[in-house]
Image 1 (cartoon, rainbow, N blue to C red):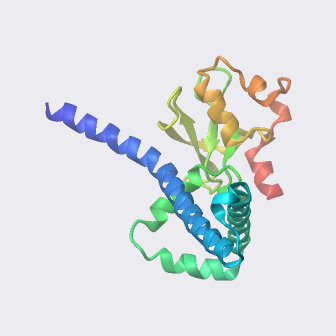
Image 2: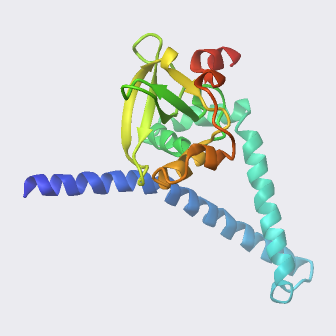
Image 3: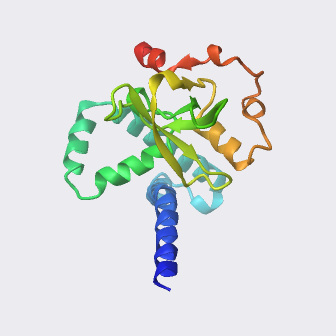
Length: 215
């Protein structure tokens, strides 16, 4: 009975970690949208418009302001001031962990935090496996890098391996979302179908060492 309860709680915790970033992002988006909506309504009243009679214009104004705010925040993230704010927030317990969890779901990151889809040699007698690199930081083992093989059709679980750089090849045409689609299909869709491209020889893919040198 104790083992069943522990297993049940463990699976619940995994589900919570998988849902938490998405729920948090949705809540923040809804909160910001609500504040903008309230602001636009007040502006409409000030200039003599009735929001009830101009619902389409009201909606367009809210969406445009929301997109402009996101654009401004996107630029702000690359400034020194943003780094200062982040250093302050890092001192808050749990912030770094949540930031890393949110980062997993972004495939547009750069440099050593970019999510790469890779072909890995060594998990079968012959051939390659398709996995993910959530970071390109070198492992504690020299010349090795951490690669994750996700489960299918539920990709919120998987296994981590430390793999030598000579056995990792970057599939540069693939993104995190492409890999997710591939996993959810349980192999019914091949990666060539997902990417809409012809199969390539392994030598045509970029070794991770070469990819890192391009930097």
